Length: 571
Image 1 (cartoon, one colour):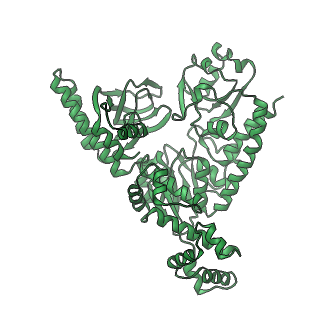
Image 2 (cartoon, rainbow, N blue to C red):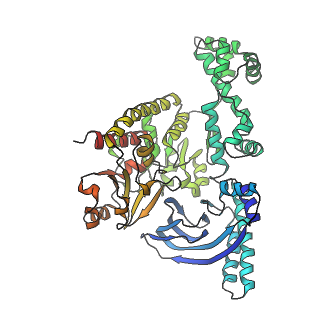
Image 3 (cartoon, rainbow, N blue to C red):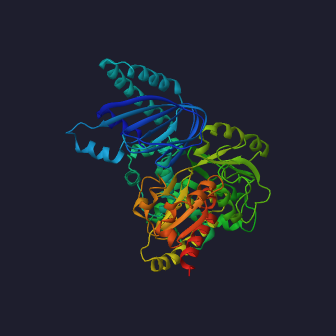
């Protein structure tokens, strides 16, 4: 989300306020679902709850604000305490005719329909504006409605200002992370500031500013550091000639590369190679300046330079335990899946030894965390509201929870000093799915496969955009039913009565202890028994903890093996 683009379009928008509500919901675990009739801003005043916007999960409390477009399915559940919130419904559009540039920016940015959320830094100005809007909305005169519209613009200005200040997760952190990842993977290719900006839908100036804020250097400086680091590895670990090394790291002119290398390291490439070869046999005083630079971990709250290899690491998301074990490491402590508090899952080869339990992902035990005294904490945006407290305990890295497991594994590989091992795990997975994809295509003959998860009196249908469903549809090439073809929403809620409309040939049904009674009840209904897939015995049950909660290489390999067993081993 580029706030500047949103502001350009808000400045041009025609606005109509549809409704201003302040609502209170009692303590409840039941789903309360509605479809937004217009674009909306929701601001939490009091209490806590789990909120779903088209299946995207938010754990909200006082000061949390969400924006969503018309047609978004809003679900509020797991309410604790008395839950109060403002809901501002509005309609906005560009006046026509308008310039082609504005039309293209609107299509690309979608400020009135896009979904975003954050915890505001300064709640008072927003609460004051919302309170005044509520009062004016109750006035019958036209002046009151005009005042509401004026106040709404103040609300947008304040919200955009806070988002701009925070550089919220949908804004610069993601773009910088993506750009860094792109540079790490394509450093040998021609890269300029302009090509990077074009790739990530930004201006060169914005990209430069965001890199400087996050890393203290620009994108091209970062690229040069990566190239120099790669060159050091080749110089110390291979006998390749200078020309070959220069080309391997992206420089066709090896003379220019030599000058650049000396500028960054203080010595020529040949001197560096010689000193490193000496360091392999004796302890050389020349070796000190040539140690690899301390790894910088880019994350959602900035960057963290690892001064030394962390030995005691605490994990505040259960999926990271999977990543650690896949790399042959164990954390000092980990939270558990809130839907299964009895044990760590069996697929992780029994309960990991000497791992301190730190509560759950949504309720980490801070006292246990302090007692553990870790060197490093790894959390996700789920713990945004306690991030400051975590940093008081130990250096903390916040990773994006729904990021592809392969990218997360690469980051954790950097933290653990196991980059090579991470790539080997990824390559083995790639080899496995490449072998299965053609076999499944021949066996399934275009039959559709869907992934559903019974919840409390509802059913979640996971779409192509869901990270685990992508294993089925992208990695293994299986065919989704029409209702699951959605690149924006990761899931949708359907009723039991709506299940026959999915009409898939095969169903993977995810269950856990929390919703087991409803799942069992579901399978006794006439509607369920009438499904074509049920009659043909094409129903495959699986644990949601393995398929969703512990989203890592071991679990995803387990998913792939389960799919292969269901379809290729079936008689």
